[in-house]
Image (cartoon, rainbow, N blue to C red; front, top):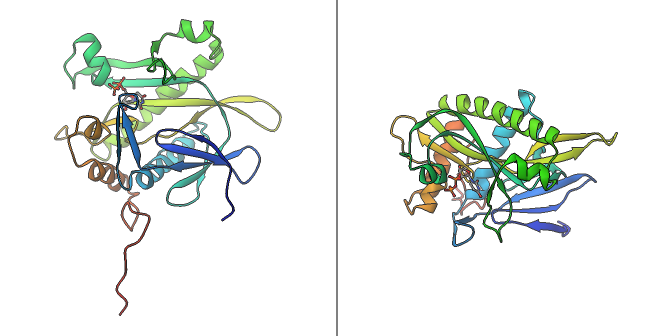
Length: 255
Ligand code: UDP
């Protein structure tokens, strides 16, 4: 295959120039990082699993009318997406107290929140993704008030839908992070669309019966069985690749 132009390399993904103008190839790596890069590791097969899981969730969301950047999965580790202008904000939606929220307010992990809570963080490795309010976002021009309204409405729809979808496969959607982008159509009209990925890398998913963690917290907290947990999420969603999470097939016995 001809060498493609790499446009951006992040912690878990690489973006390449796409085959047509206005498209990109999103490549899912096995690299895992936590605590703003202070903890690094490789989870073999994670990229393959996240590619499938994110594809599945983006397709289901598109079916209920949530606009996303996703076009189609290309292969085990890559998907074709629309090129969008990423809004430099992480939108975190929480249903259950965990992680930084539990710490900040001294809440017990696992406490059901009275309603879904939305938080914003400014995407900046140098600044350690500081928490921000809508005031900062609009005052500094990262997004317009109308963009904010769209992002909040979409985030709540995504949350309601995903809570139900995951509950149907025995998983509790504790919290997750979304990213949005501005997509300009052929008539140069702008639309806010869901971008990035939705996977156990950026969701907290607990088994609904045992509360066992089935997400990146297993890596963050050295709980072991990280790959197995991602694999189980994929299996429950019905998207576990037949060959398992590995994209390189082992030697096969020839009769
Ligand atoms: N999250 C993420 N990227 C980040 C920070 C958070 O995907 O840079 C996700 C995380 O996986 C969790 C949710 O957002 O599902 C809330 O994370 P929290 O603020 O509790 O941060 P943590 O304590 O996990 O760093």
